[in-house]
Image (tube, rainbow, N blue to C red; front, top):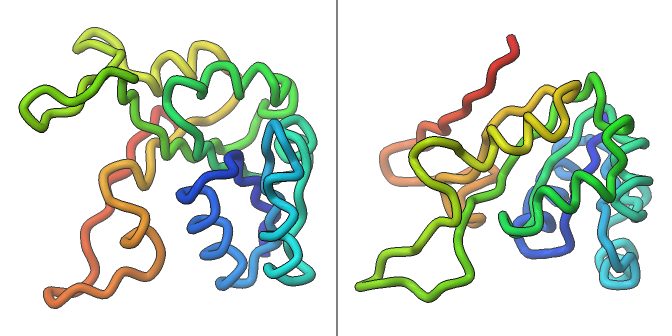
Length: 160
């Protein structure tokens, strides 16, 4: 089984980390503040580990980026770009702006000329980014059961 680093101490990071553990993988969750993850680690079992962003990125054979979109570039810096080189980075972020929605529509801090994943790929050119999980809510990220069957999960990237 794989060693998967999940970067992020929020709900999406927890759902994905728990899902990888459920499927037999070993997981290290990374955070700026590792103490936020103490309760999760205590209840997650022997294959669960915690560390800084850099420790998790170095440890994992694959990496999941599950942080607020506005923090994603800074998190890559905190990982150390060398720790991401040659690894698949599953990007679950969305470029949602800090501004409130307008007429119920979320605002993005990116535009039609460049996506957040393109920015991240430019920042860490030796990593292999793939966009995943960002088009569904976290309740549907792991083994979703819907009346019509499992949903189609879109992924994209620039590396086979």
